[in-house]
Image 1 (spheres, rainbow, N blue to C red):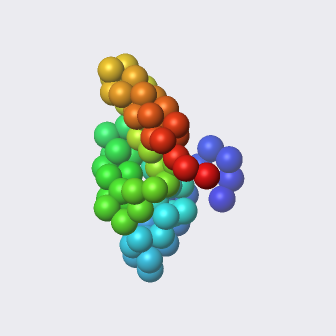
Image 2: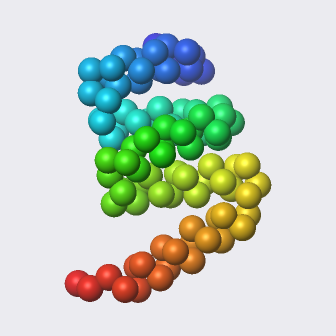
Length: 93
């Protein structure tokens, strides 16, 4: 695989998900590749699937927020940012 060849990358990610449909790294990588391509709707679909299995992933919620930013849904981005601020402050160490 060479830089700039996204089709083989998507095939590899899909193959990984056939073997392990709940693999967080593969879903995040596939979603990130879709984001980079500008396909925010499909990336959000992948992230929603992952959210069913792991709601505690900071990478997941960051990427969802960045998809909304890419789609210019700024109200949703503000919601995500406020949500994280509130939840971070309420954490007990």
